[in-house]
Image 1 (cartoon, rainbow, N blue to C red):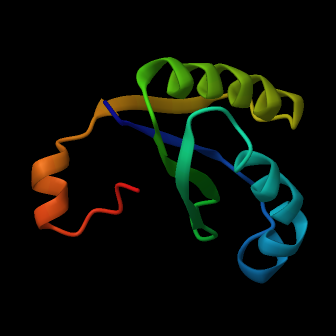
Image 2 (cartoon, rainbow, N blue to C red):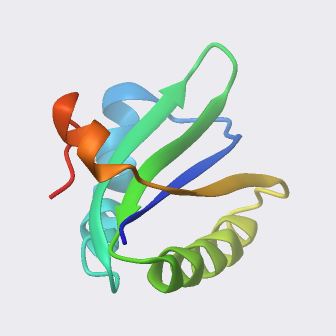
Length: 101
């Protein structure tokens, strides 16, 4: 069963186009993670927050990614990472056009 992973953290920037330029290499590497299906990047320059919503094939790959990414973020100097793993109700998500693939 697919698992949704929600991550957010304080982030001093960059944001917008500068974030895209600075983190495109990271984005490409994320696509190669085991079980990865997709990610929606989130950012709020006003509150200096960033993160993402991810879809993984199963709970094991979502949790493995969370552990690895939390350590990576700590290496970037981000001390507090907030995360949750959710089940996905695929029939209801399909009705509301959720990108499950």
